[in-house]
Length: 109
Image (spheres, helix red, strand yellow):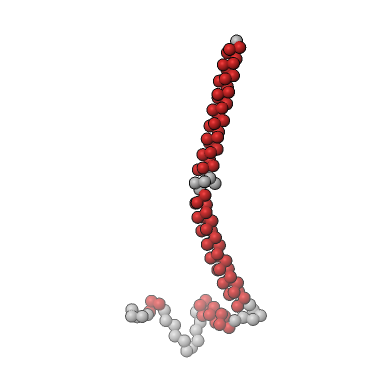
C-alpha cells in the first residue's frame, strides 16, 4: 500500500514538474514572439518613428493654420490674405486681371 502511494506521489510530482516546465516554455515563447516581445521590438520602434513623423507633419500644419487664423483676425486682417481668399473662394477678380485656367494653356508652356 505504501509503495502504491509513493509511486502515485512520484507520478504527481513528475506531472507537476512537466506542467511547470511547459508553463515556462509558454511564457518564454510569449516573451520572445508575443505582441510586445523581443521579435516585435523593431516593428514597434519603426511604428513609433512613423507616428513621430506624422505628429511633426500635423504640428507643422497646425502652426500654418494658426498663422492663417491670426492673419484673418477681424480686428486686424491682413489685406493680402483677405484678397487671396476672396479670389480663390468667391471667384472674383479685378477688371484689369486675366484668369488663365490650366486646361486653357497652350502646350508649349
